[in-house]
Length: 76
Image 1: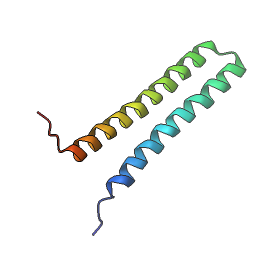
Image 2: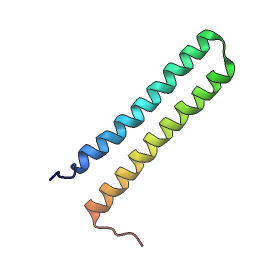
Image 3: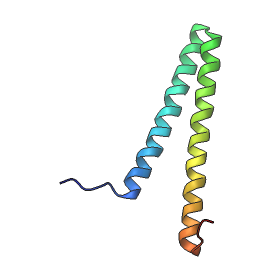
Image 4: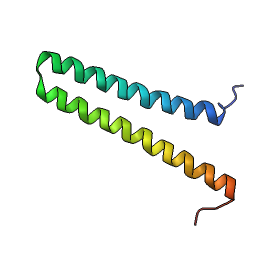
């Protein structure tokens, strides 16, 4: 029987996934810039921005959850 991963492990996995997504987009942008492919550069910039937004969203949700736990606030 397998146990479910601890919450911290799952959250860390998500952050690593977001970091890898951003890194992949950054590499794609640099390579596309070197080849002169402007369409691919723009696509990579969009992917990079999306990855940063997902990381920010995850950080905000973590902060909200932490505050709710600390102050005992429930959702309505």
